[in-house]
Image (tube, rainbow, N blue to C red):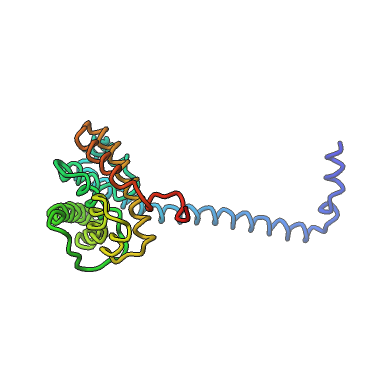
Length: 247
C-alpha cells in the first residue's frame, strides 16, 4: 500500500498527456542510444583484439620454430627454462644456454657475456673487447641474429640486425675485470658509463645469473649450475653491493 501511495503521488500522474508522450519519447531515444553505445563498444573491442590475436599467432610460430613449444603448443624443456627468466630477454638467454655457449666457459667470461643481455642502453658503436671475450661475443650475436630472423620470417615487425644491436658489449670488459678482482674505480675507467648505471646493471646481472642457476637445475646440468653460482660469488663484493654508499 505504501508503494501504491508513492506511485499515485508521483508527478507523472498530474502531467498532461502531451508531456507524458514527450518524456516517453525521450526515454525511448535514450534506450536506443544506450543500445548503440553497447554495439559500438563491442565493435571497438573486436577491432583492438584482432591485431593482438594476429600478433599472438605469430609469436606462437616463433616459439615453435625456436623449440620452446611443440606443434600442439605444449611447452617443452626449452620453454620451461624460458619461464624461469624474467630479468632479461628470455629468448636470447635460452638460445645461449641450449646452443652450448656457456659449456666449458669460465665463470668470469660467462658473466661478461651475460652483461650484453642486461645492458641495452645507448652505447658506443664500435667496442673492442679482449680476445678472450671476442669469440663468445660473436656467438651471442649469431644467436640474437637468428632469433631476429625467425621473428621476421613469422611476419613480426623485427629487423634481425636491429634486434642483434640491442645487446651491447659496453660492460663486457668491465664485468670481466670486476670478476677478476679489479677495483670499482678501475672498471669505471674501462667503460664510458655512469657509475650508477654500472652498479644498476651489475646488480641486475646477478639477478639474471640467479635465474640461470634455476634454469640449469631444470635442465639438470650441474656443471652449468656451478659455473653460474661461482660467477655470482665473483660479482657480489665491494661497493657495488654495499647496503649504503655512506657506510
